[in-house]
Amino acid sequence: MGIYLNPGKLLFKEAVNSQIYVDKSGLIEYTNSAIGTEQKLLCVSRPRRFGKSMAANMLVAYYEKSEDSHDIFDNLYISDRSSYEQHINKYDVLFLNIQRFLSRVNNKSDMIGYMQKKIINDLRSEFNEYISADADNLVDVFEELYAKTKKQFIFIIDEWDCIFRELKDDTELQKSYLDFLRDLFKGQPYTALVYMTGILPIKKYGTHSALNMFDEYSMTDMSALGSFTGFTADETTALCDEYHIDIDEMNRWYDGYIVNGIHIYSPKSVVDSIRHKNFASYWTSTETYEALRSYIDIDFDGMKNVITRLIAGERIGIDIASFGNDMTTFKNKDDVLTLLIHLGYLGYDPASKQTFIPNEEIRGVFITSINVSHWDELNYDRATKKHSCVIESFCHKAN
Image (cartoon, rainbow, N blue to C red; front, side):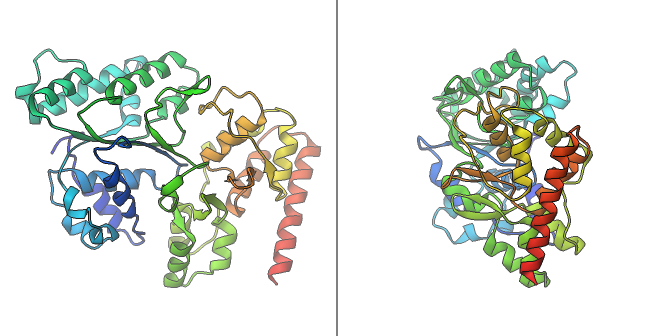
């Protein structure tokens, strides 16, 4: 067991042992089907609070070979699937949280070199006889390991996109990072499976993705992974029945995201509302409001008027095609709105190609962000008054 190589099952075991756990091990059935195929490179993006890290920890616990994890998975959905025994605890797994590497270097441009050094040192604990003493290039190390042992690895990468979110304007580092990932994974026989997860889809330059060998799943198109993106309506209803929670209020506060026709809920919001026995906004941090404020203040093509209409409950047609999958290169208001979809501030219906504020929790975040913003009095009044009318109408219908 190492720091990055086969780090164990503890993190996922803690999730399963928690008061409220919803079984998402069906995702493993899908990743099992991708192992050793041309679809083995997966990039799955979703907002914060939607279980990204839990899913990554689950995959690590299932695949890594340093510990027997049958005690966890024998009671989960995946145990009844035909691929269960074929893959459980059969692989050397590299689990990389890019955020941690980025936070540990003073000069951010040193991050890629620092990451390679730390991973190579960890690999030496298991494969030192196959790694040359002066090795400092991670791709070279994996290529040599495969040439000598034919060993394949599974890579699980969390917070893969943190460079694009935290260093929004450092295009040089961003391109170096994408080049590193492309060299590490494209056409490499040592990869049995790569599962990357973060908030943003893969950065595009022009009309092309820099990592076009990945199958991508995002809040605008989750394809087969829709039911693993958050809690489904059935899962949320079951929790409300178990804990005697008003399902109508749960829906009003947290329902509204639509992924490939499936209604999904933010797991953190649902769990926190049950634990605290209170319906409220659990996106409550200054950072959250400030982050949203910076985008809704952008005055593209009447952006503030669009936000006012969204708060009032309208759905707005949107073209998501031009979004560059970053947080800076906006060409129009649709690009800004598409970013807000990926960040979880807006919902998206691919059938109608419309965006909307999904629920009362997120509507409250918008109202608070406007409160701390510099909107003129007219726009503010329109937004808040229309919002009040929507709530009053809703309550009247409910009664």
